[in-house]
Length: 118
Length: 113
Image (cartoon, rainbow over all chains, first blue to last red; front, side, top):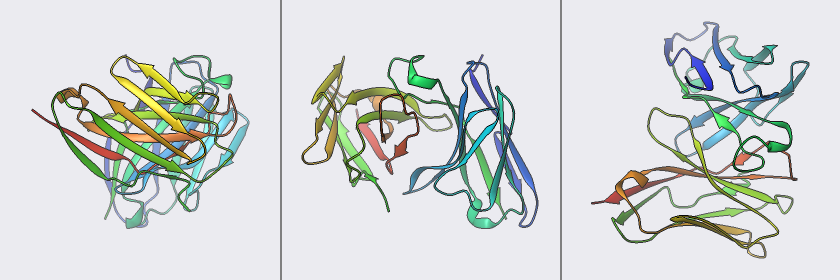
């Protein structure tokens, strides 16, 4: 079973609609992240959360909001979707101090959600 | 302002030869660097990392070199195999234990059989 799951995997929506992308993890990590990937721009950080009561804006938070419902769940919402939010969205997790993977500071990624806004 | 740059969007290499992927950074506070590999329809997965106290780290066919004075790192894959065809992202962080990463734009590596 995947440690970091994202739902839905694909979504097509219309301009102006509200949409929520969900992320769940079974790794027991406190820290969770949302990124978007665009061609030629790499992965850019949208929001991150270091524990349930902590929410921080990333590089490109405008037009997005998040909710950390529990340690294992971190949701990303687009309040009113627009076409330039069409992208691949990734959720990631990490452990404080980075001691859970083969490298310090490692993040573990979900499989991604491909979102298209028409 | 792109703090981590991968100036080659794509690279093609013959199977069995060496692949060299490059990454430059501008933030002098970065002191830990990671390479991630991404296949289509999957999330990025960790490949290899290096701390700023080192100038080289090797793991099997993969070696990462860091030149702090030039703010440059490179990933060497030798010998290159067809399964290495993927997008490679360089990432950097400030401070040991700080998992907030800044990613580069990625390089698509294609290994030609």
